[in-house]
Structure formats: C-alpha cells, structure tokens
Length: 149
Length: 149
DNA sequence: TTAAGTGCAAAATCTTTGCAAATGT
DNA sequence: ACATTTGCAAAGATTTTGCACTTAA
Image (cartoon, rainbow over all chains, first blue to last red; front, side, top):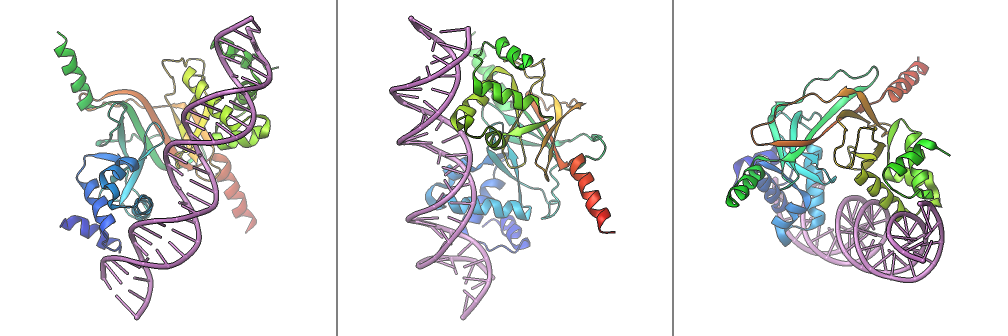
C-alpha cells in the first residue's frame, strides 16, 4: 500500500476506491505527465473509461493533479506539488512536450518569467509549453547516428 | 474583393475557392483568434463542416494561420504574420485567453522571453498562453459595478 | 481538360449523461 | 445503513475517411 497516495485521498475527503488508487500510483511512479489515452492503456480493462474521465476531473477539481495540453490538444496529467489547493494552483513552471516520444516534462526548475500585461488585461493562470526533442530522444538520435559511422 | 486575401492564396498556390475566401476574410477582419465552432456559426451552411476542417488544416500546414489551444483544449485560429512560412512559424508572442468572453488575443507586443533549457532538451516551438480577464470584460465588469452604486 | 477542392454520407473517436448496482466509511 | 462512486448502455459531440460531383486554372 502506498501511504502517500492514501494521504492525498484523505486530505481531500475522497473515498479510497480501486480506480483512484491505481491512477494515483501510476501518476506518482512517473517523472512525466501522462495522457488520458495512455493511462487507459496501462489500466487496461480494470478501470472503465468513463470512470477514468470522472476520476481525472475530480482530481483536477480538487487540485490533486494538473492538466497540460500537448501540441495536439490532448490532455496530459501530472501530480501537483503540495502547494496546490482546490482554489489556487501552483503550476507556474515550464512544461516541455517532446514531439518525438510525446512525453510531457514538468521543468520545475524553470519558473515562468514575469510579464507585464497590457492595461486592463488581468492575468490569472499562465501556461508555458516548449515543444521540441527531449533528452532521451536526443541521445537516442545521437546513438543511431553513431551506428552509421 | 479582398486583394490581400487573394495574394495569400496565390503565394501558397492554393485555388481561390469560396470557402477559402470566406474563412480568410473572417480571420482578417478580427483582432482575436477564432475557434472552429465559432467560424462554423459565422459561415452558416455556406460551408460544409468537413470542408472547414480541411481548409483550416491546409492553412495551418502552409503556415497561413496558427493554432492556439484555449483552456479547454479547443483550437483557436489566427492569421500568421508575413514572416511565417510552411517550415518555420514565427509565432513567438504571448497569447491571452479571456476566460470570460473566451477570445484569444495575440499580444504581438509581448515577445516570449528567452529561456535556457536543461541540457539535451532541444526546443523547437514555444507556446505561452496567459489565461485571465481581457480589457473589454474588465471594463464591462467595472460598469456593472458602477450601476449598483 | 484535369488536378484540386468540395459536399454528402457514413465511420471512427471522444466525451458526457442517466441510472442501477457495488463499495467505502 | 447511506452517501459516494462505479460500470454499463446509450446519447451527444467531434473529427476523419471515401467517393462522386464540381470548380478554378
């Protein structure tokens, strides 16, 4: 049993059901955000697709996970850090979406730079996504290149 | 006839068909990006929904328009500026998505700040969206507030 | 004339909704 | 025991595909 996962559910007064435990432990085990279809594949037929939709939307509403849209508009999900609450997400870091492996990395180290908005434009949430090739895919490409020489 | 619209199509060797002319002149007439459903409403039954999908995807592929995803993952489209080509989009300005009127503004004046990526993360395209309340909605809210006092 | 583009119908996806049965507390 | 939550079935919405017809060049 994953104690931390149970704590998360406790904290938000959510029942500890099997679909929720599965989803949370998958999210916790990953360093990158994961898309709904990918989650669906991992979960297999243990969890109904509809339940997955509802689970993710509950988690998002409670501030347990946050959503990042990749290049094609597909939603990817990652655990929020402890500072997120239902009302205020602390999600102000840069995301990196690899166009090769499709993984979405939370670059927690890169804070979103402060911007001055035009007058009367009141910002609320900021989304900064960089699309490109990630570390792993860059290295993989380099190795392929080696082989040819 | 809108000469500039014709020129755009010429430049990309696209035939000047009625759906394309309609879509381009709508995009040119707006200061904000427009969603596919909204376009559909404006066009009415003059243009088939399927044709609209294909038109937008052609334009995007040619670098005539660029896509911005709003908070809900809905695609919004805006004309690219002249410096965009099929291969390299010059779309590196900040977008502002009003969560009240849903409009997506291209804040051309705000360049995306330069970021240093972690090693072996190769950036290609950058997407910077600020969600919040736009000028018009801010003012509208202020007026409503006036009335009550 | 003829390649490109459109429109319709129909398939394939994706997402939401309603409700009875199951489950956690 | 009871409010939540799940799973199924079915509705709704969105997006894609195939193909015959039309149109711009």
